[in-house]
Amino acid sequence: MSLKIVVLIKQVPDITRVKFDAERGRIDRSSAEAEINPFDLNALEAAVQVKEKLGGTVVAISMGPQNAAVALRDALARGADEAILLEDNKFAGADTLATSYTLAGAIKKLGNFDIIFCGEKTVDGDTGQVGAEVAEFLQVPHLYYVSKVKEVKEDKIVVVSEMEEASYVVECEFPVLVSVTKDVNKPRLPTLREKLKAMKAEIKIWHAENLTDIINLSNVGYAGSPTVVSKVVVPKEKGREGKVFKEINEGIKVVLEELAKKGLI
Ligand SMILES: Cc1cc2nc3c(=O)[nH]c(=O)nc-3n(C[C@H](O)[C@H](O)[C@H](O)COP(=O)(O)OP(=O)(O)OC[C@H]3O[C@@H](n4cnc5c(N)ncnc54)[C@H](O)[C@@H]3O)c2cc1C
Image (tube, rainbow, N blue to C red; front, side, top):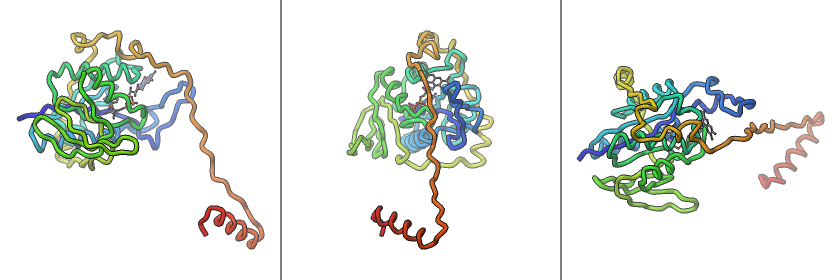
């Protein structure tokens, strides 16, 4: 038995440092280091654990600029066997629909697959739509908000899915798309040896022209994106407020009153 597992990896900017270009309504990606979307590290770990249990190959796919090859190299160091970067100017400006259409096209081009793992959402776009849309384009069921992989067999997976107030145990036969939360596992750290090996590994680059037998180019990138962002506003954070008391007893009285009001004393 050899399972074919796909992992969707998006490269995102370090969200704690990134700046926002309010004028153009976009993230200024040059303002911070890029890394694998944290949820996708969990997706990758889940994929590698399945491979280690049942055998198979893990193919990491990312759609993004040339620099996203760095994220794919990291994925190889963490246990992926192959990496494919979908990179082309024609893919630029894609909304979630065009992104999902392109990713699904690449997965179709790979041929048969058993499981696709992805993150529940990204820390930059944060729509949480891509996984479900990829599943729809491929006409396969999807299991969302998966917090635990309970069991994997040669033809099916059993997971715990966190939906609203309840946790569901769901069993699904392959092929299936599984979208994971951060609780599903603890991603491993690559060793120096694994990192060095990944430095030399091949990252396959697929341009739009490599997919024309599968996808319609009018459905990719900006041209294929029905979403229009009319305005983006960066909310102003309310700063901390303070009061200065020159008279110490008055200060203590106010603090005690505030604490009592909040039921803390
Ligand atoms: C009108 C419009 C224009 C945009 N233009 C640009 C642009 O020019 N440049 C730009 O960078 N972004 C652009 N975006 C954002 C882009 O559409 C999203 O980043 C992308 O569609 C993924 O959505 P998300 O980040 O919300 O992913 P989510 O749906 O939150 O992600 C869920 C999971 O899907 C997988 N996934 C998501 N995206 C990818 C990917 N690219 N490759 C592999 N796996 C993935 C990951 O596993 C991820 O955890 C634009 C968005 C809109 C609406």
